[in-house]
Image 1: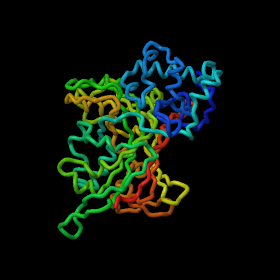
Image 2: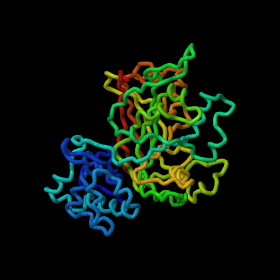
Image 3: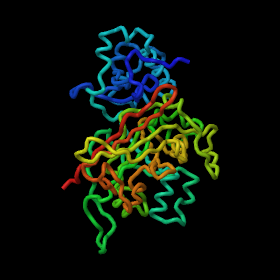
Image 4: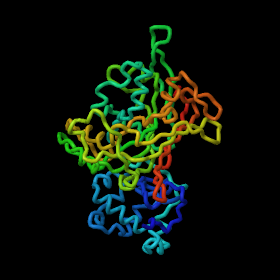
Length: 421
C-alpha cells in the first residue's frame, strides 16, 4: 500500500508527518489569541482558519466552535467519532492529491504558520493531575534503594496501579524554566531538619494520558471502554526533589517534593496515530482482578530518550534510552482503576505513567536510579552529575519508527534556575 503523503514537504526524520498530526495550542504572534493547531512538518496548521473556511464539513464538526476555543478541552470532550472525523478531514486536506488547500494560496498563507515563529502553550486546561507508578523496573529499583532487597516491591503493587494525586496548577509547557525548590530534608548530624534549596533535584522521564470524555461521579469506566476516554498522549517530566520527598512522604506520600513543577510536551499524539505501533503489553502475574482484565492488553512501542545539557554547553548528553512498552500496567488499566471507586474524570485531565524505566541500567529513567541515589556519579559532557545542577537543561524526546515514517512527540524540555532567595 502506498504511504500517505502531504503536499507540504516533510523531512523523513520529522516527528510530524501526515500520519501523525498531533494537536496543540499556539499563538502565531505574541498579541494573538491562543488557538488550536496540528503540527505538519515544519508548520502548524491553524485549525481556527480551517474551521472559518468551513472545511470541517462532516456531520459532527460542521456546526461546532471547538476550533475557535483557546484550548482543546471542548474538542477532546467530543469523543472518538469526532476525533476520527477531524483526522480524516485533515489528512485529506493535507494530502498531495487534494487541491482544496494546496491550490488556495490565500488560505495557505493564513492557515500554515512556520513552527519556528509560534509560541506553543499548554494544549488543554488541566483540571486534575494524577501520577501513577507503573514501571516494575522503576518500582523495584526504588524499593532496593530505600527498603533493601527483602521487599523491593510491595504486594499491593502487583494488584493495582499505584498512584497519587498531583498538583495541576504547576504543570507547565515545554521550555518553561523550573525554579529549584526550597524545603525540609532529613536532619544531618542534629535533630533539626535541613532547610534550604533541594540538594537532590531530579528529572523523571514519563508519558501522560490526556483524558477525553469524562465519566459521571459514581459511575466507573469499564476497562474495555477505557480507550474511548483517552484522547492522546504527551511526554512528561515530573521533576522531583528527592531529599524533600524522602523526609515528607511517610505516611501520606509525595507533596512538596513533587508539586513545584511538572513539564509536558506541547503536542498531543492521538491514539489513532499510535495504533500502527501498538504491541502486546507485558504479561501480568498474578492475573489482575476482573475489573482490570482487558480483552486486548496493549501498549505502544515508543522509543524514549532523556538528554542533559549543562549550562554553557552547546551539546546535550544522552543519559537514558527506554521505551513506553516497558510499563507493567497499561494506559487503559490506569484510567479504569482511577474511576473504579466512582471518581469522575474530566476532559483535559492528565494521568502520568510514572517513571518509565526499563530492565537495563542505561534505561533507568531518572537520576535517582542512574546514580543509585547519588552513590555513583554520571558523566554528562565530561562533568560529574549525581543530581541536577542550576543551569542544567533536561530534554526528553519520544518517537515511533516504522512503515516508512516516524510518529514523534517533539521534545519536552526545562532548565533549572536557582532557588528563590
